[in-house]
Image (cartoon, rainbow, N blue to C red):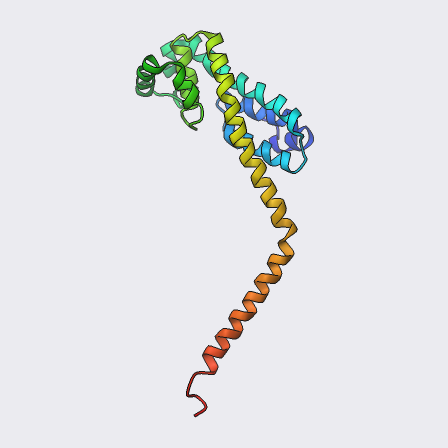
Length: 198
């Protein structure tokens, strides 16, 4: 496997796209973490907002469609596949199928934002033979909110870190001053007790 950190450092857009795809096929690169990383990189001007979004959005949709396609191709036999059995068990497949029959598109619309559930939903939507165009349209709509929330969180976190770095000297001085005051107060309390000089 290539060194992902080096890939992101030298080719950040390709790196982010690769992480989304690798996460989509079951490797341990959580989608939310990748999106937060993207927001962090935007806040530090490593990548630019618009180019990053033009890479992230297709990456999300491709990763989601891959899971849908696998579910559609293998059907209920998906639970016998060693790789995908870790994602969805036979019992989980049945329970999600029941909910899918009741609520259909709403399951994807809202369930997409629940980490740990979204991959299962995409597989089940394929197993249930949801029309591909319908799946893509619903997923394309709800993915916008996922991007906004997670990239926004990374951006805010990155800006907070920058502010912290700018003010680190002030924080250090304040910490030193507070330590001196506490030490001085302790010495007074310890050695200048009431009635000692009587």
